[in-house]
Length: 418
Image (tube, rainbow, N blue to C red; front, side, top):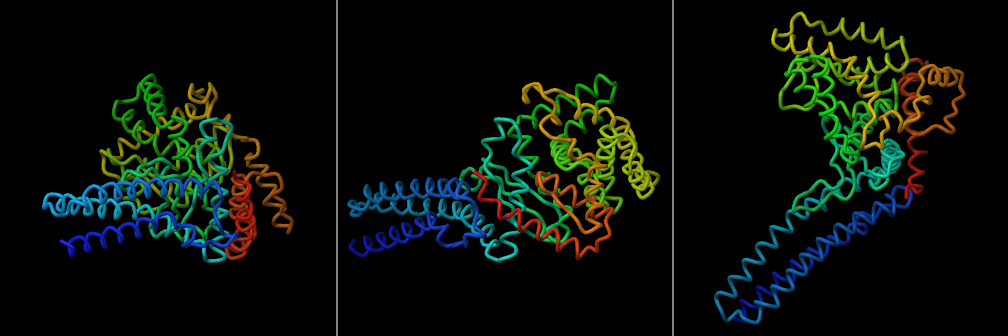
């Protein structure tokens, strides 16, 4: 019996030591001040980890206190063994949460990447924080890099393993985006997913679009598809309102994929066919600013992706959906939403700052060796860089160096996020 008691005692002590690791994340990562995340971010992260740690320690202490004195009973020994086994499984799930943030944060130990990712945090925060009370309670996001083609987000409060709510938005971008920083609109799109949920638009938009399409006489299949696609169209539009033609320029480039991808329609995939996503963005430009270079971009897009070889059933769906792009665009630009206090989505933004002719003037001054971004929001600054990339005289390597300095400077502003 003494041997059994000692064995259980060792298992209990081992579990106690390991679970207490959960509250040591900040110490283990040991981020230098210049690369560190904000105190606000540490606060919500450590609060979540401490809550889980306290819950497991409490269960461990309560179970040990109940069963250890009664190990003379086979039933008590079995109950304690069961409890320790369940705690092992609970800890393994919990450490997925711990390991996720360990991986995300240790990326910032690399000097340049630490500050560059800090700049990306500021960009993502600027994309979220608008004049709406529901957005004021979103925690500042963390951006990190990972392998793969596309960006993604783990939204705030989404349940992680063991039912732990994710304490802040985690935005993942491919490593390659840091070498084409003018396409960091991907970050803003992912931030848009968080916004759509927090504002309640994720449930309202499908109904609004379906109603508008039904009134316009659209087929049921067209209504169904656009209702499905709103979960991606919404963040696309949010990105457009943040960055204007930078979103258009980026999406037509990022989605210039082989035709079987560009024309793909799935009844279970919330992503519209890239063919339509790009055409939507051209239309937003047209409805806001009239004729412009996006008309030429549209001609090129349609030339590169003719519908002639698309299977008949898919082609019919694409043709029908394309007919309603102007209508969908008007709804997005002009609808006043109850969840936005009877405001339109664009009313949350300063779209005058994104006027293409204004952005073009920045590109001209940059070509002359003078570029001042003073007074512009981070998202508008990104729009300027995208225009410079498209119309400036800089080589890709030179623009990358300039944008790296820009992100490093933004990264130093994290301390102002409260």
